[in-house]
Image 1: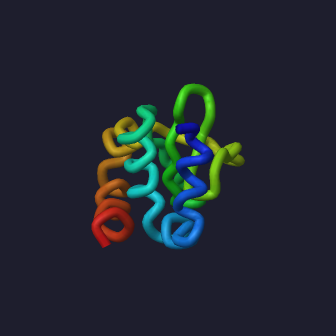
Image 2: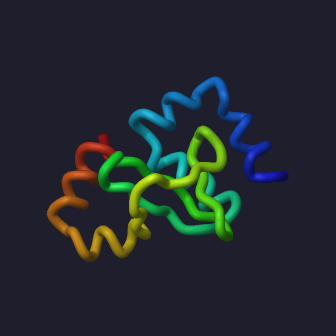
Length: 91
């Protein structure tokens, strides 16, 4: 199954994953297709990079800001990442 076809299956709940649970959608895509979860700090949004493309619940996206692998961002920004985990991921 193609990535974008898989994402279309979530159309009815797309807003749920775009506005509040984007981390978990990135994890779903990573689990299903591989890749790396990235974080966009200005938008406070998670996406996943699969091969050379980025995706979220809307489909393929072109980041309009610098993106960081979530694992590296957590390491480099422990205080900020703790807040993100508390308020966004574990909400």
